[in-house]
Length: 267
Image (cartoon, rainbow, N blue to C red; front, side, top):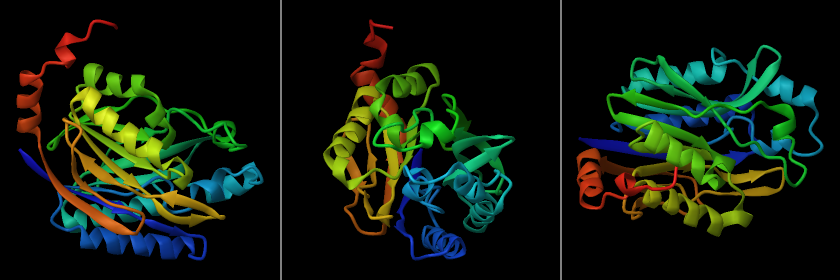
């Protein structure tokens, strides 16, 4: 089965209002029509640094938070219906009772929430307050018409155990990964994205923000990577849509030819 993918490399700017950011995302989704699966990056509607920098208060974060039923996800859900595609909404600071999560939703072509997934490994370095403000999510996979999807967000990339669980335990065929990675960690990003695809013999599709947030540069380099670790389509540091096709039948043939996952000894 061939699946058309469109990964939106969204350009963040503090100069835009939240409403302007949502309208911009809607335009990008319209330009992605024809894709089966569309991705938006981490915290595109408010900014990672604007949410978790050392000088941000919990009250400021609370004011920026939303529920899954809130405006951002609801409007992206409508666009899923408009273009008849699955959309990974990109993450919001989700308010769930008194708790907060860095959460994204997978929306189906009818605009329904198939599942949500929250960032598991939360940033607690360089003074970032994500681990202080948020609670961690859980390992999440879901079976869809497109195949079995597994999910991760930003700092999760540094923990290979998560991706092994997604593939070996959860059966993931496509890893959907959203991020607001810093430009200072560009080589880490490129190497680790390819490693996660290669070591798990799966497709790895990333949507990473570009632009500037409170003086910090996001790196971009969104990509569609095949199970052999080859780049099907990729990008640089400019705002764009990365488009490509993936073939799950080819992936399963490759896994039979080179049965790395069957040869795992250490558990």
